[in-house]
Amino acid sequence: MRAPGAERSTDWRSVAAEAAGFARRVGMVPVLVLLGAIGAVVAAGFLAGVRHGAPEPVDLPLAAAGAPPPIATTQPSMLRVHLAGAVAKPGLYEVPASFRVGDLVDAAGGPTADADTAAVNLAERMRDGQQVYVPLVGEQPAASIAGPDASGPLDVNTATAAQLEGLPGIGPSLAAAIVAYRAEHGPFATLDALEQVPGIGPSKLSQLRPRATV
Image (cartoon, rainbow, N blue to C red; front, side):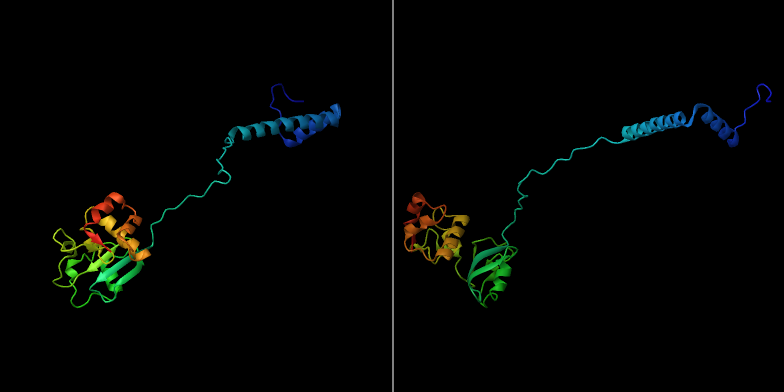
């Protein structure tokens, strides 16, 4: 017999014996029910803790059905240009967009021995529809050939872009457009055919009539 206030043994054999005695007194079924209830409570607490610590689900936006892909814009990779004057092989050329005037002249076999390359900007970047004219040494500048003191009208089928710029109302972009149209469609049959070039209408054509011909 234990003395009053003595500490109860925590030996596992004692605990097992007490549990067996309790089971004999109340029966096995109530014990199993009790253990099941305790297990259910523990499991419920565990799941509640897991749910409480889990992050909230995030809805990600979905691509709309049939949405077109992004459109990439690119610059033309090739240019069509006209090389004329004192070069080995003048004519129409299709060159990379990265070409400069000097590259074009080299691609055409280089300048002739009497070419005045100092009169041309060899470092100029090329543009589609451009005409490059390499003059001879001592040749009168092309722009002045079509100037106010010219002795006669300018033939728009043979004039260079620089010469066309000497006509009234014709700037660099419009001169290049005339040369490009001529290169693609051939010589102008009549002066009125210039109206087929974007930027030339009846009013501008009336300015050109006294100074231009075909």
